[in-house]
Image (tube, rainbow, N blue to C red; front, side, top):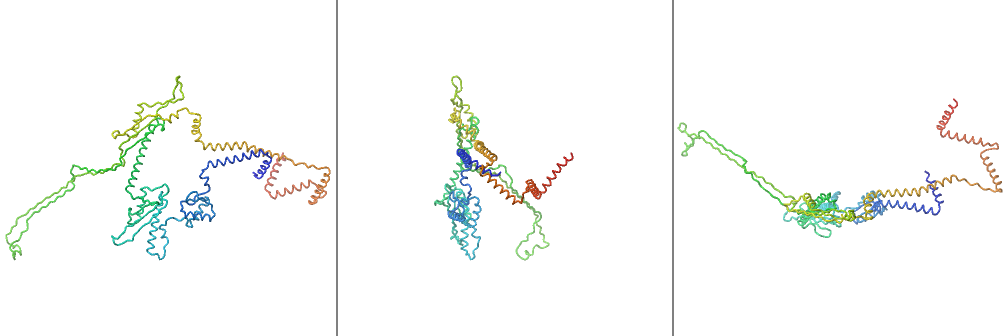
Length: 569
């Protein structure tokens, strides 16, 4: 498509239109463009439209780092935005390049230094320098860990590490102080406070949790009353557990009754559960009356034969020599037996320890309110009118509902549980059943049928408007343009009106021009137009044969094939 020719035709056509037609076409085109722009802006995210083309470069910067980043962006001539505090945005096509460039310059600088201090060793550093660097690195690592907590914006850790001594009486325990700056409307829980103190105490040898002081940016000490904090946290946990269990029971009651009452909006249930959160544990020992042999020992001794002869008397040679051979000394015979047994019995026992559950139900009370029935009143002629009549539930239905509620929440009469069911008229139900006005019907119809398909209707409306614009504006404009094109094709050049006085001069001039052209072409008096045409056609055929010999050969072959059958006939 030749857009240049089309554009020129449009310009010529637009120039031929009347002033009123130009105004109508201009207004129509402006309306369509404005409507399309409105749809684009309407369908896009308002937050994204205002920030389109920009992306976050850095966030959560300190004022010093932010100033350095802005200075570098201005130096690089990069446009930027600061939509909120500590956030800098740049065009998204340069965000990664600038982030790498600025990061290579050490911007932004981290707020804390850690063990990277020991990446470079300094020649000639003393032992004192190494101790100071170690303390700074440890403080920086602890501060980084504390900064990772969600409520903490930034923190600072200071450690007091005394020198070690050989004398126990002169030893001083280490201590630490932590200062945290929290985000607005955020606070540390008791569990987080204890966690910070334990984190710091575990990182330093011989440091106890009691020697760690934690304060906020306002100078208030945090976590001093640890027992009270633990009790408060326990109480909060118990209240959350109680509320959650009561909510579950209420949902049970509503889910059970809603199919029979007519919907969840026609029943209200409130359940109160009294818990006993006291911790109890019991230990019991049970003895078995049956005796069980634990161990048994048996000792048995037996001796037979004659006892050895004993030599006695006054000390001297005879007694020292021993019995004299030949003497008649007959000893008495010996037999010895001994049996001893020991049996140990054990009385078996069973030791059991029982710990009561976290929460024990003491009592359940439930209050349930249900709606009644509604019917349209009838007039004296028995015809149904527009007025709505309320019909309360009878006692049988109330008793049935009470029984269902008791079974659904597990009521125990021996525990003193109580369930109360009442029947009242719900005003919302009456309004729904009352005769509706035209406005309410229209609103309900829109919210029920139109609102769910609004996204599709939006695009359908755009399609309809574009179709109408195409039929009423573009097509007539195109037809008008085509008519103008046809008029130009049929347009003939005007015949020049030449007066009789000028005709003779004009003929003479034409003859002179003709002779001049013939002289330049080398044409004499014997000029023949047919010969000239023949020469021109022959030259043209020669050029075509040189440029496209294959096509000429195919053409000649085709002509020969067409002539051959005719000759044969």
